[in-house]
Length: 337
Image (spheres, rainbow, N blue to C red):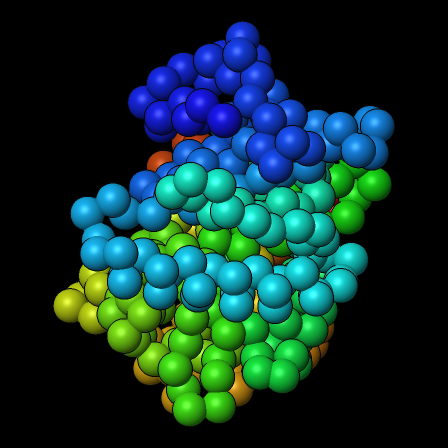
């Protein structure tokens, strides 16, 4: 097989000259790129009509043959773990293999929009995603993470973020990227499909050490919480390293979106504690703190908005005051989605 297009090549290169992997997977286009590989959309020529996502992991040609073999061995160990997973919020891994200098992971292709695009769309319109929807997605994600963490040994995802969460046409959440998944072995050694440290905005301090850092289930809790922060505020969270140097760098969520109930804010900030020991010990514990939250009433929303109304000029306050009731119920209707 000839080599697949390099990351700098245009997306349409594949559609003009489709490649076939393992004499089975017909690559049709590139749907994602990273520093150590790409993700391709492919047709399965053994199962008519089936689309799949093929994740390519390229070996670093500058490494010694011994190190490259170690990396490949790690890939096969991790891929075999992923292939055994079966959960409705996780895409099913159906195959893994190597060709040339690359390793490949084949999984279900998940149609639909990712939560980052959905959030950006609402932000451009001056809106927030409905909190009830975000909490529903959070319940689904929490269930998937509890499943991953309950494996023997536990599986840590390490790259939870809005763009890795897709909503299917059936309104089902999918955690789509296994790029940085790690398996926690009994002696605390870890293995990883792709070397990396996650996305900085959602990465806890302990994960900055790459594979030498000690990550556990609490690392996923931080990323989970940071993801909720972003989805609920339309504002990316301050990076953990920045917060370490300047503790006030993280703006409280309710300062950005006063419609967020105080107990949800408390849960998110708890999950985003810089010290892992200060976070919830399990995703179930974190999820319970979210479920304890309640939806604010219109009167509570008015109280939450009072600081913003007070900052207006006297003339503007009179103008706003004449339409306050309609304003509150309009917000309430938008919030309930």
